[in-house]
Image (cartoon, rainbow, N blue to C red; front, side, top):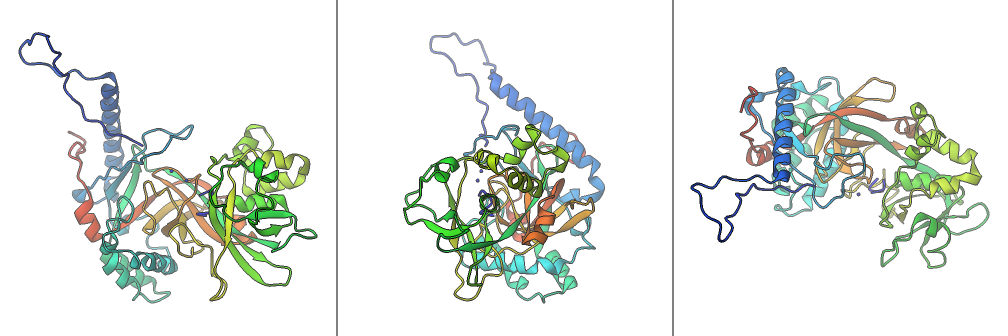
Length: 437
């Protein structure tokens, strides 16, 4: 899903005293004059701190507040999306493993391959390379990753001991709440051909060099045709459009061979959620919106389908994944490692570092608790904000059954190596555990 429409403010200001104007008489000690914008910022900060105190006070029984740590991070160089607050921030509050919802019930060892994949990526980095904004440096992960490689497959008890030995969990807060949105995605399975012919008439393109900014409509109308960029041909334009949303696919060729294609870039256009537009127009009932319902509507209305699909101008380019050592076991994520079904998750790297383990607390589409260890290994242009996740659920229609209906609120906790937590976590003096300044 790097593929997944692969995308990502804040400025901090320091209050300054009003400067003395040349020629103006001094009247004793000058009083600082606060600019209206500064007043607004100060009031907002005060309200946020009060809300955080209240939130932490109510959750006191589940936290080790004696070791309270609060790390405020902000995303940079991004334009706020419509409907989003322009000043999201990530706060981390230290807790303990036994307070993680569902900790005793998860089959922790299922997440071991995903964590080992992250460690394999970190192993290629120099020691001083930053692991996002809060994950320390690659060198901080050496000891934990070395130990991760020694955990036996399927050993849930050993995995729990390993995590408690090397990591410190932190509850994630977005300003005044710990709640965010969690969705899911999957890898499609499609029939395709390397050359156009017969039923194979819908092209998938390789990334142009230099990059282009043609819209989806322009590309559909032939803006890239005949330039040698055709990677694969599919049968159904709706299947191709869905692939652009998911970002990767297993492709069965006419000769029976299997290959895998993945994300290679995009056209630089903004992502527009067509499902939301269809709900607004009354084409799909809000309570029944899912990937399946959108696909079914488009396939049932071929005369209108292209117009609706083109309302999302973003276009995804693909590459064939290296299969010299056999077919990859899954799609690649933004971290550059193979994703692990049900254990890899896409996040917003402006806040959450790629590669780190995350404890998820949300609900499955059927309303049952979904509480498990995940690893942040992918991104997506619709995955924005401090508490936002998109679970990779696997390949094919079975995975679609889950992924297509997943859209629930929830929260998560980030696990950081203890050395990182000790060195980098900041204590904010304005926020006291007793609720007073």
